[in-house]
Length: 356
Ligand SMILES: Cc1cc2nc3c(=O)[nH]c(=O)nc-3n(C[C@H](O)[C@H](O)[C@H](O)COP(=O)(O)O)c2cc1C
Ligand SMILES: CCCCC(=O)C(=O)O
Image (cartoon, rainbow, N blue to C red; front, top):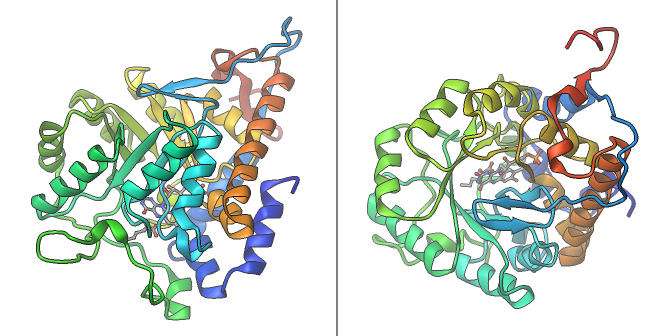
């Protein structure tokens, strides 16, 4: 495989149409979904010349975890729909690539089993846990305890989903339930029996403060697009921001993640890491996002495509392709390290090129 696009094509052929469309789809007219990728194509890089060194250092510290490159894996649900090894394959591949895996609360494998699979590859494997706050605080607390016991070193609270997004592809297929034998394994053995994952508009900053007080793990807020929310998050002592439009699966009228990034990076002003996901498909996308102020970027669907195409090996290919492309793009930009990626390198494509 020579590009992420090729792995996507193989995955499309392998997956049942209803499962492919669950993974690929977005909300409503899929404007945000498409814009996530298109927005990168509207931007251009102005490379610097004569770097004077053949060494390039791309490792980055993410809330105490060393990642070998500024690319991590964003949380996506139901990996066993993509491949029978599911999240175990993903966990092994990400550990082998020495980067951070954000495990989805909606995984089809428990967080404990994912952690064991990752640690068998690398005892220092970095695993974070994504959480939808549940209105029953007992459930949330138990999930946090399980993630902590599994050795997760940060919690990523998804805050862009007060209600479920409307996915018309799923409606067309009538795809509402996981096939027999697959389940959201983290939601078993909870008070009141197995639970469905709840999304709730009742949640407020108070609930986040409550979570803050109940754990010593760093907390990242995922799904921030408004600069004012980023400011509030930093002022209230949260540890990181993940700029994301949920891969275009929630509100369709939102901007592309990369277009929302600069204002948020400005408001945050380096006080906490600013992460980004949505539409990252090439090493040059990683360069652009870092230059515009991201500390690192996440990939969602490409991991699912790698998994569906070739299990653990497919996910490894995705991560190694991006690592290679990123390093190559950094070299072509005359960069020696991540600190060389500054916002003067980015401009818009077309006749406005000098005006940005
Ligand atoms: C099939 C699928 C399932 C997802 N499940 C979750 C999830 O369980 N929790 C969450 O916070 N985000 C979830 N997301 C959003 C991703 O974390 C991420 O924001 C998005 O996929 C990034 O965009 P990309 O797919 O263009 O890389 C999901 C996305 C997809 C495509
Ligand atoms: C309850 C599962 C939610 C998964 C999700 O976030 C998505 O499909 O985008």
